[in-house]
Length: 594
Image (tube, rainbow, N blue to C red):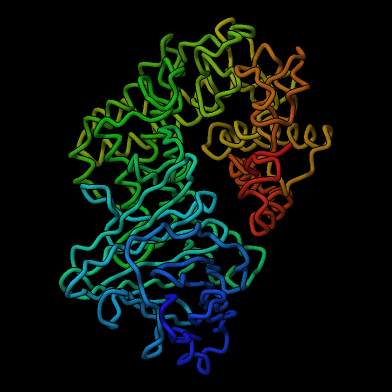
């Protein structure tokens, strides 16, 4: 670039479209001649996206998207482009940003055309040199995820979705055959997410990036012009995070895969419309289920390499897998897949039965759950998702999931042609429901306890999500549900919790130290016997969006719509304002707050 005397100014399709699309704006463009100065920094902006192009190689130095077209485009998602061993010239020709190889003809090898609602990236073969792939180098904190189906070598087939939580979504398509995108993410010192577009070898390749807003069709007309639901529309996909190295849905693209969270992905996936022509959320869910059917070991499973202190399968692991399978099969109608994998799915359901060690209809975890049974140094985790709290033995959370899973397994067995199995799982569901309320109801508080330990004690910290699940899954009557939620809402008022913009605490009173597994203050542990010095930190009463659905939905199903909306709308506003995403000044994420 330093040797050329060309002055390259406004680049790309913006010049041709500005009159027809007044929202398209040129950002500040600087030029450089051989005498020195700053390199060109070439950008385009519409209401839906903003980009700035690199001056020394094909690629983006800034990238932002707003699927709703409200111009929320201040945050740059990109890391600086990786160093390239090839030299390029960048110039404008025929209303496009063109990059040609410095050692060769001026014909472009990469071209970028920008329009109002998306852009096209075109790769053209070079007769003498093989151009390098185009790498989109995202910051790990953007949590940009590529959603699609993995190839055998770990690339992602096109069509695919590029989704950036809290911001927006692109549908990526191409007319070229047998083209897939490189995808990698690393949570190490580099902390990157990389999406790679292969360069053309023999014939040109055109990649289309079209802005999309993807959320359920149900109720769309009533909310699309209601700004209270902007976060719902913008963020509905955000739970689907594909870890490229595990090739599975995970906490995020570079984090743990957890078998006990798959039911959460499926709850969302069955509501989603097609992501783009040729790929659906159900396809992505099935791909993850295929990995579990194939024997992958994730967090929550014995012998997983995710957490070495998981000595036993968590009680919620197999209910989660069965629930997700039921959601997938019943929504997709793919009974051929069900029949092909039925023996493994049945083994998951039978593990739930095996956990009923005293044959009372409920699962029991090998840990006792007794107060004071947790060692100072963690050697074993509790029985479920809430793994810093001492859930053990008869665990209300996991058994609520198991009821839903047995109901789903009954349908799966009938669809697979096993009516005898269906009757078994139907009976298990009925037995579990028959003892659930009486086992976990605490007359002293009027709510459901978290667990009943091996010594017969109820451990009750006013867990909101457990009583929410009991209502949503039909484990209590409407009358019982209203009595329970009368008590919970009164307790919430009594303890002074009203910061619904922060989400909900899992528990309304401190978990005592003797019932807490992790005594690190960072994770809600502490030194005081009553747990008060760890209260409001992480799972010990910290506020979070996690599991808040079950409270909101329970209130709705009980006809308590005003209470439900008093929680829902502050949370949605917080999502729209980015209060649940990213990192705080102390370096910790906003997932949990005090």
